Image (cartoon, rainbow, N blue to C red):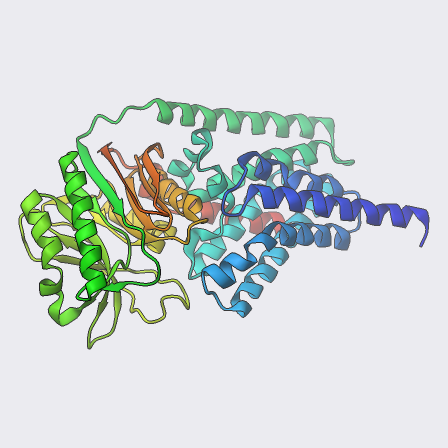
Length: 469
């Protein structure tokens, strides 16, 4: 092996490690937002200067390094079987490798415009396809890494998360295209001007939305979580009675602060379907006495099977409403049957109810928005160190559809955000806690809530065209 080959191998290894470490910083459960913007750049700069197999291999290796920190989270914390997780990792590496390989083909041929578009379009198309086919919905998206950057998250109101993912890849893709060995000066200038124009338009949209004041009616929502280990506690047990009394105290505290609707975490209690009204009477009585609506997550067990349910105990003592979780965590929630129906508060159809993982699915949230919801209440359950990510996925869902979101998780976070993704109230619930806020309700729907995944389909079409030209 001569010196030139050794040098090239060394450069490939260095780039794989560099981009891999940037992906690891820029993704995961608590990302550094800027790292995701930079991570693809070394891969694309290298791609046009090494053979195809080397470019693809380096890209796949970088993604594997970046995702490796999540292995224990999936297999241990989320109890996902090892084989599906391995398939997910391999599929992700293959997808990223193919995207970089496609970009390389246009870089080498001097197709500056196509090279600049390939990574943004193909990456968003890849994420969109995964969301259409995966039981985890839109979980696998790099867009959430920017959830605390309002200037970026507002893009979701136009395109969903797919637009954010494309935007994240755009600077590195343009930089690689205009500095590639092939291509004319005119093409380079045109690509730069178009990219600047796109960013300027999106920045203007973000500034306008971020400055917008919601003048609609306010809903005072409260969130309460009590420290609890293990699964749902049988509500009729001595331990359940103690937990009920602690939650009644939390509901009373939030009601005294002025909250009119109060949300408690997912599968807090286990209840019997045939005795549900009797077993939940203390919580229902508290709701009626305090004139508040209480949403509480329970594991409902009965002859027809078990379900993960959000029970709505009304302020006026009406029969409890029940929402069955639509999207269950594979393996972890195999004992439950999925629900199919939406649920709104009976006296206020602007308030919708769903549960935890349901917020990983943009279509469900859009369905609520089209049905009149302006705020979504979400009992949830996290595992501690994933609290930030899960809460911010909910925030981004709200930006997409133009709805406020109030989500409270056991062992995670309690978060209230408005329709523009502004976090109004938040607290860590690892050891229990409460939060409340007066949330303004937006009247106007977003472009994404009206048109759905138009951008995702456009990315698929554009990627197909780029691949065949």
